[in-house]
Image (cartoon, rainbow, N blue to C red; front, side, top):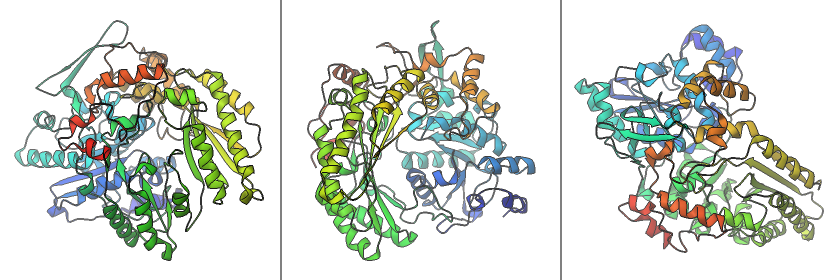
Length: 615
């Protein structure tokens, strides 16, 4: 390790974040490496090391002998200050080498509030922020993740975006870069060639013009660049790369456990859910494959917990047999099994008995809305009876801690819908009281609400977000109605949700705003202690833009969206139809019940959508 780094570590919190050397990290001989990749997660070590997507990308890259991927996380404010003061550039954990010396600087974008941290990490690395200021082929700055489905706010800074599943697309880009380096190719020529790769969006190859009212007039590709860029899909998910020898952190992280990915995509059609649409078609791994991956990962890491991940875990078709197989191995070793993202409409006593066999924790459900009317509008397909029946089952099995998640500000929400959240919560309390087993144990019911953010590529992408003051009025209305002592109520920041909506629905003019916010001190803004609304409103005003234009305006039916440069495969016509059905309160069945002809299966030659639907 660099001696300068050693000298500053005693002055920072949690120095283990910055030293590397963890069990399972990959170190290679530079003489054998043709492409070096700095995989950058624009948040802290504890958050980034908990991210399964980053573990997959790290392992998939290092599985190729001639490529070397290293990890980079955003330093906390104390470490960032010490690094700047000592002239230490941002470095990778495995080698300690400066990020600016790598061939590829790859950012994983899972949440819009990380954008200023991307700026901060580039600046701390000594890499020019703007793509047009980086004339040489390397370092090539790329980005992927869910936020890449609307890449435009970061278009000025990123050389190319990976749209969709990244584990195969990244390797295609690295292979092309390897050849470009060997041939002495220019950056411009390389980017033209990269644009031909399925799932690659190169912002510099597109011109955007605007109408007088600020809406987009046209998006014009150049040099035969595709429009739209259709996302990449890993079609054979069962054989797709999975890291069974992950890096084991040497300090505590948020999700300190083994995680296995049951499915990618979702058969449900919640109209607000960007991930549900973006990662269609739904794909499953075989139970035998998952069992092997979980056991191998546990053996390698020594963790005492394994969690089964998906957008809707209880929709996995072989969940009970998988749990039984896992428990044969985990139970004698006192390794617990956790299942997040459960649905209230298919939770069972058999499933509950398996989950609690080693260690019992709280149960979490997301009804999203308090009234059936509003749940039908958002196509949640969960009834009040489903939730209450599930809670009765859980309470009868000995559970006394339940978390319920809702959104405020959904399209067509009324005060009656808000108060219905309190009514539903009170019915959960009543169900607990009816349970003879739990009468002597206090109930802990946590109700949480977030501020609805209309996201790109969803049925609600045309809808406005309610203003912060109205959101807070509804928060107070609900808080006043939640009077039972067993219920605790948490709500998400209105100010942060406003800027999230601005960035989620924004165009490339916001690049100047993001840079202004960064120059004014913005970084790590997913953390409440670092977020400042004034920085954003001041920057928007300085650039002649407004938050209301992006967040609070209902979009015209035929408006050109910034995110029209990408395609999830789900057609705009389908999303418009779903929007109309929402206005009538008409539900759409899940993909296994009936195909809704969303268009996603057209992007997969193997017809995965049909296979999953008929499992």
